[in-house]
Image 1 (cartoon, one colour):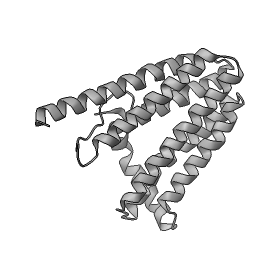
Image 2 (cartoon, rainbow, N blue to C red):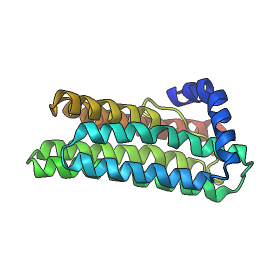
Image 3 (cartoon, helix red, strand yellow):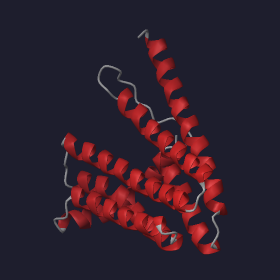
Image 4 (cartoon, rainbow, N blue to C red):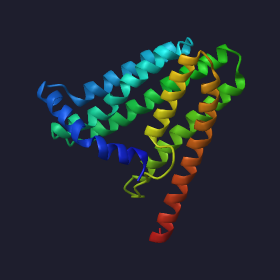
Length: 205
């Protein structure tokens, strides 16, 4: 069980309760997803200017929305596939905004080695999501949630290092965080690829 699975299990009851109230107000899950992306976009603008504390606080505020949209969809008994596709698409945009903001900051600061680490972390993050999505294809039909750095773990590392950089007024937490993300996300991508290979091999495909 991943950290995401454990947290989902712990927060399911209070989240569903909150989602019930939100659903009764007529708020649609797609609106919540869009609001979350908007918050991340504003956070990215602060991060790009080196205002890490403000950016980190906005990222923190966006996290509950990332879980609430799915809970509201359940409360409204929405079973359409498009909502899931839209949610995943907006999540990828959110990842792109955050990593682009840090990349811009490092490029402006002349820290090319950190720009490379940021791009490596972005590549690994996208591969983790891509491998899961590709494995879910009907022709492959393998459910892949294994690995150390699922989206929640990545979000927590980004949040902690951003808030720490702002509170300490130092880029040291960012340096540590991005090297952890660069290694962790790419290892996770390889873990998932290996899992798919073994599952297909054992299935005779």
